[in-house]
Length: 328
Image (cartoon, rainbow, N blue to C red; front, side, top):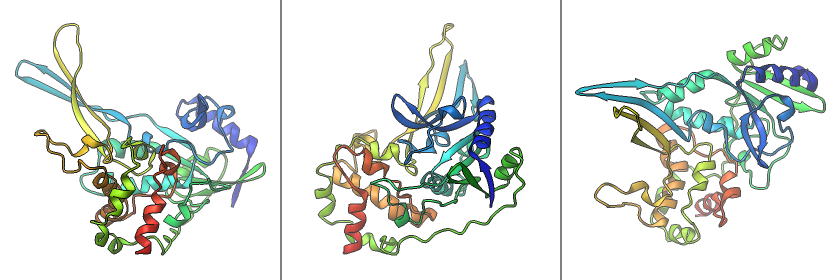
């Protein structure tokens, strides 16, 4: 395995930061997030995982899809595809595997989403293996591992003042070549999901269980679980008027994150809401992750990062649901 020293790695990261396209874990008002950095000195190296995943750099919390200009009977539409190239350093394995789950929908299901596809094309992921697990992490149950390279372009393994370097893609190969490292591509062997995790067939018999209503009683429908999740991908689309000085008609079409646990999510124009009860919304969240999504797209929509457990203000724990289904 190729190696690079900490000082040499820091120097290479400084060069990437000078181009304005380096994202890495750093503190923002004492909150650890993946954010742009001006150099290696701003990077936090000792951490479990940032509060938010790297999902926001590929499936943005809010983004403009179209710029719409109307003049008389003429309507002009301008697509606003992202152009920025990014290198994201310090990616945890659970976050890279989250992108693989999103790829199944946004890239591999026709037609591919052009906004997501462009961001994936323009980004290079440098992973950093975890040294310890956090109190809410359960990635190994979901087929992950602390040193899992799945979804990375380059994977780093820290050993004191040195880092082992694995190169997984041609993008990663081009990057480390600029570091003076000549490396062959290495194959990635996916890990197996814990056999105790309920499979697709385990879920349908429990759809009407009283468990869902009882379990949801403490849920606040605050939606934080969806926003911190590396695989949740519900969104809303709206057209908003843009104020102009000359009175011309200009609009922008906006896509923004939504969440199936929110009360308005299934409400239609006539006011009907097919998931007005919290129990049905919370049930849908878990069925989507472990039954609907893998049945339709392949991967489970959970990487075991534990962010939802850690962020929930009332201790709704996804592992309680998995244990409940597995025990029946």
